[in-house]
Length: 188
Image (tube, helix red, strand yellow):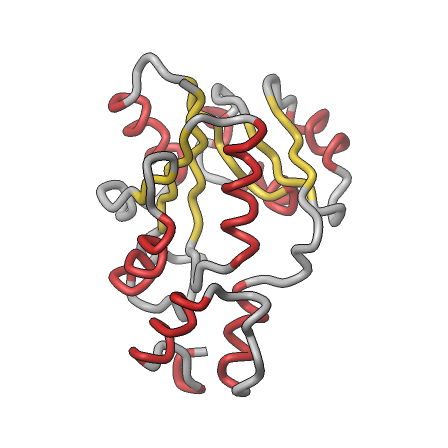
């Protein structure tokens, strides 16, 4: 089985994240495991992991799993190492945006990650082929995704400014955010 491992903060999960997952399942993968990261050094202003997991669970089904057991591991290579123990006969694909390739050599034990095939989400913001060669990525799939011209950062700012975010968030996620008052000036 081909399994995509999608690690991120998902602060909050938005329609772009889900579009990526669904497109990967339609074209390349049999299962996607989403791993929301815990609070760690490179991400500030994360809402609690509990809330991020709750929002992700709106999307969980037989082909999309939300992993809540490995999110306290501080590095992606550790998460993949542990998931490989759980799925020893399957092919694990590291799902990442092309923009992550720019700083990839700074990731802890990035060389170990090169043992896994990559599913690279190309949003035309990075010369993907340049970085594939530079990093010597041996196995990869490039998935072109269009119409994702926003990020969780933009969404958080819009929420603070009380701007419309219907285009970026599914109804259930927005209702959850509003119910728990998750994004305010103090949290951004």
